[in-house]
Structures are given as C-alpha cells and as structure tokens.
Image (cartoon, rainbow, N blue to C red; front, side):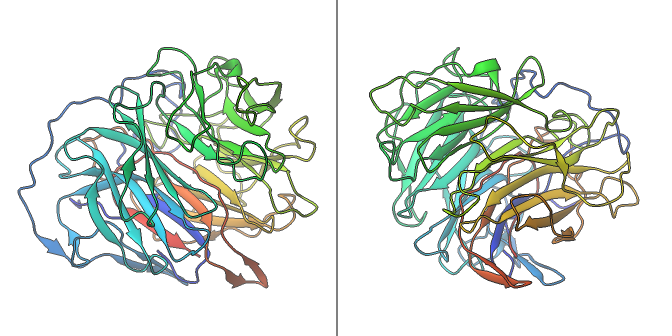
Length: 477
C-alpha cells in the first residue's frame, strides 16, 4: 500500500482533469447503496490534531503514461520531488483564460496519511501543467475542506474553502495562484457542506457577481444559496432553494439568468431551477422557474464509494454564441431503476430550462449490473462542444478497479464519441479506513487548444467535484 498522495497533467493537451484517487471500502462489486446521499452527516469534523511532519524523505515525482496520455504529479516539494508520507485529495483546478499555460489547483492537504487533519493546500503552474509549485497551505493549522476554485475572464482565480463550522472563506489570487488573499477574516456568514460557486462572466448587469449553493448541512442554520455583488468580498443573506435541491452545480446563461441544478433533498427528484433577477443587484434573488428533470435514475451513495457519493449532478450552459447558445445541459452518474450500480446519464434543454430531452446513456459499454460508471462530470467548450469524464470499472475483473474514461459530443449531446480510457487503472479502496470520508472532487476543463479527429477547442468553464483520498492527478487530452 502506498503511503503518499500525489497530484498530476497529460499531453496532447486540451482537456484538463484534476483527479484524486480514492480511499474507500467496499464489500462486493455491484453492492447496493447503503445510505441516502442527502442524509446529513457531520463528516467534516476535527478528529485528529495537526499532524507533525516527522519524515522529510522525497522520491521522484510520479509521471504516469497511458497510451497517448501522460500524467504529471502536482503536489511536489521545492525540488519537484514527491513528498513521501503526505497526502492530497479533493483537488480542483482553474485555468487562466488569458493564458492557458497558467493554472492553479486547490486541494485538501494532509501532512501525514496517518492523520485526518486537513488544510487548504494549493499549487500552480506556468507551463501548462508539466511542472508545478506547491507553496503550502492557505492558513497553517486551520482545518479546511471542500475546496472549489474558479476563474473570471481576466484570469483572477478564486478559492472557496469550507471550515469545520460549515462556514466558508473565499480567497482571491491575481497572480495565477502563486499567492492568495483572504476576503473574509472571520469567514462567510453562511455556507454549508458540498458547496459550489460560479461567476457571471456575461456583459450584463450581473457581470462579476458570484453565486453559490450548498446542501442542507449549513453554517447559518437556514438557506442554501447566497450571492456576492462585489467579487466575493461580501455575501448577502442566505435564501432557500426550492425543494431543498442540492448535490449540484450552478451556471449563468448569456442573458445573465442563473441556473441551479440539484436533486431534491427529500424527494430524489432532479430539478433545473432558474433565477432571472439574481443579476439585479438591488433585488433579492427569486427562483422563478422550477423544472423537474428525468435523469434516468437517482443519485446513490455507499456503493463503490461506501462513505460518500457515487456521483452528483452537474449543470453547464453553452455560451458559444452559435446555434446551440444557451442550451442547458445536465449530467450525472445515477442508479437506474432496478440497478445498484451507476451509469452516466445526460439531458439537455433548448428552451431555457422549460423542458428537457429524454435521458441518454453516455457510457457505451454493454449494460452490466456489476459495472460502475461513477463520478461523471462534463464541461462545455467555447465552440459548444461537450466533454465528459467519469470513473469506469468495465475493464476490471473484480468490478472495482477503476479507470478514467472520456467522451465528447459535437452535436449538443445528441451523439457521443466512442468512450476511451485515459488513465491507468487504480484501486479505489487503497488506504482505507483512515480518513474514511471518501467523497471525491474533480474538475474538468477544456483547456489548451488541441487537434483530435479534426476537432479543436479552447478553454471553458465546466467544473465538477466529488471527494476522495489518495493520489491526485491532472490530465490534459
């Protein structure tokens, strides 16, 4: 068993994925979910003191090839070497749209795999992800979790970090992630677990506004949504989300309308929820359109990831300016009826979220109730192309060893390219049971332009997450 975690990039470069290999425990392949993913559990808890770093050994950084893909380790020491005995997980990545060779990754940093105490670690690159610098943590000795990063159209990076209290801090970087400024000394007044945020990059009245939502485990005791009209410095009073929808993400259409995707906390129904006035700074946001969506199943937990989610909902909007502009897309790894394992399912709306297509299965292997297709996520490129990734056990005799798989769509999700594996297989149960909070965070971005089968694309803003424990890798296709 390895005793370190690491972070990684690939070349033939365009699609960037921050991937953290999981610490989990499972009993049998295809086991049924054992807990409700909406059940509130105090998983973010201080159960170990800050770890003493008693080993300073290093080893060569990990470079992991797979076919045409190469992965490069991110969490390295000042000499670019692997730090033996430390750990990194829940990583998310941001790309500077003005210079796609500049990226920053945030993660939960464990100074020792023997301790559950986590801090807000980060790294940055200036050469497209081949080499990384790991300066340290946001605030030494402070317990932090659930990092979410994002960037605006000027290349300013933001880092949202969850505290043990379920309140949050937002940090800002104006130098490509080399250093961060805390925007709230005492944390946000609201916030909660499984939080996510997005930034309005349109030219409308809400330009620069930030919006975030979280689940029903909250800091403030009520409300699952908040807005910042000053670039994340201050946040307004929290408000309720219809049907307590959670475990999803947010995005903004070109007309400034805000859309939130999630699964109802009490009814397991997916929703696409709109606020058309959130972009008006002197008005309290109102959710004026709530559309139930059939995703072909429900979110599950306790299957291949027994202490956490097997997938969550991701919503992203096409801002290409072409014929698919303002299409709304939703993708999730869900448990179909009569199954206990997950498939990656996709739907789209071409009428502003009023109606959605029938769910479409993205993973193209034959239906097998023993196989998992988990933590599916996707993004929309500037030209409207869709890129999806997920973990997949189709090639595993034990039905648990997983590989990262990829597929794209050039026709608004009507059809998808043949699925392709982009990583070596990994054991998702390695390292359990210490630090057994095994939700996972990943991020998908269409990043540096590339050419594959005559298709090209550049940077986009799709982001996704989940949580895990063990080596983190950044990939570019």
